[in-house]
Image 1 (cartoon, rainbow, N blue to C red):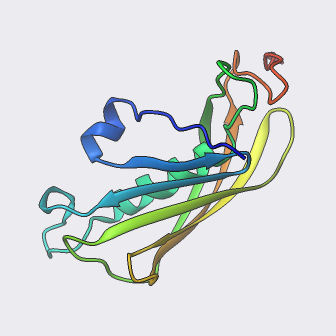
Image 2 (cartoon, rainbow, N blue to C red):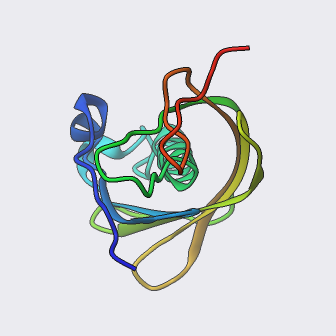
Image 3 (cartoon, rainbow, N blue to C red):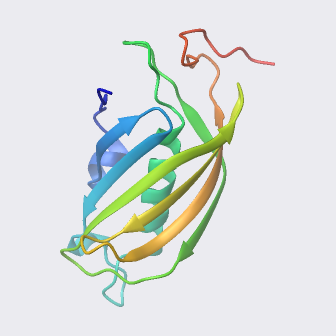
Length: 144
């Protein structure tokens, strides 16, 4: 299956993540940890890891198989667990997977690993499709 990638918006460019794989129910977001990503103790800020989880999870439910159509979602709930420690220079990859959902709401999970495959963080999210988004078949999501 051909993967369709999208250029991150302003926030994504500011943070420095990139979407490296995207297909139905799956997304990978990568980032090289730089000095601006570190907290006062010299490790990546938890907000950075939460951003990677939120982004990968959101993308995992928003792939649209109809060329030119777009799906958008908002985060309803995001849970994160910080289980490892990364350093400046590490390449972090967040892999998000859509696990369930319907026409309006979808559920996801994500793992963030470093370049050696060590688990750094994990999380789960619940998202709602925005009105005007396209369904995978190209039909608009209607407001209720």
